[in-house]
Length: 289
Image 1 (cartoon, rainbow, N blue to C red):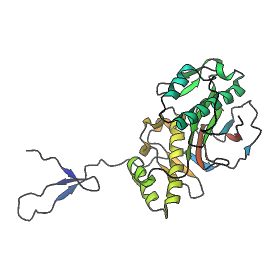
Image 2 (cartoon, helix red, strand yellow):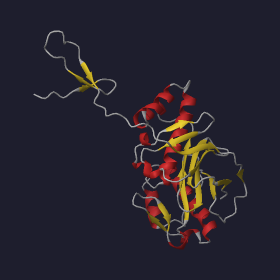
Image 3 (cartoon, helix red, strand yellow):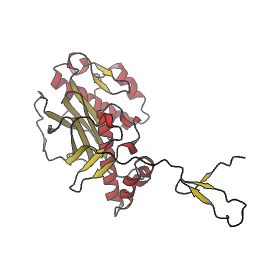
Image 4 (cartoon, rainbow, N blue to C red):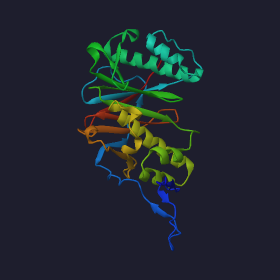
């Protein structure tokens, strides 16, 4: 009869003791396959040093630049959503909570207004296409204008770059799920150990959000988002205030990349940006509605 092994607290299989004399101690057998070594870093995220401009960057982009817009979100303020298309309005209606719906609509309205500055097309007239895993892109003659949107409880970030390969993520600080429990579940073992060793909850939460932002920005730049296990894109501190990200899928690490850790103006949010191409010039600006 085949005995199904039970699991110990470490996830290893514990085989019941045999009936032979001297074999009354359970034997622990590690059924985990050997882990691949962490690959070479794919991108370095350095703390951004640019100021957030009030008047905004020029709408014209060149191949060496990337613009990041900070959008303050206020769920209590009425928003004119007439610029959204039928699909966007239908998606907004699927939100259960009114505040979540308002933030999503506010972020999409701002995205359309920002892209209109670069394309010269009216916000309501912009047309989007979607890649196989759902990432939106501009359709028609402005398809080379790449963008990415992320929003949290208090703000949104919109990144715009020529070439299309750009990802951004923002996470709001403050009370939330148990960061260490989530890290042990979805990060790799080394990342979880580092977080567990940090001296207090606030420091641990900040490090967790920073790592999460880097992972998600990288995966969004490749159009795969959270369909990829986060443990396969480990993040390590660089010892100088930044961090490096590696990717076990070497096909995504081809080429050179610019990464940045973002601290948003006037809000308790942490963000990360990644864009194809080395040495991209990053300009940040506040979007004024």
